Length: 116
Image (cartoon, rainbow, N blue to C red):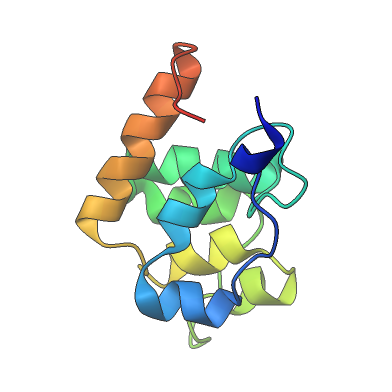
């Protein structure tokens, strides 16, 4: 892999969320040699589970101890723990197309064919 394929500066999180570029950045920085990945393995695991079954959001958040207390704003626990993936999942911030792109990427990665 050439060094030009490895990206450098990470765009601000708020910008990625507003511009819906979080998925693109996640995939483009998904190579193990990239020094600036968006998510670590634990965060990717949360996203992988969510993309496999978005309807299981509450179960996933409960399993990773990020379920919010009744009356709390969505993502309060995830935000308090510094989990961007948990926050994104709790707040339904990914468009259906973005979930589908991530699911496809995770499936290719599992099969050893991820485009990195």
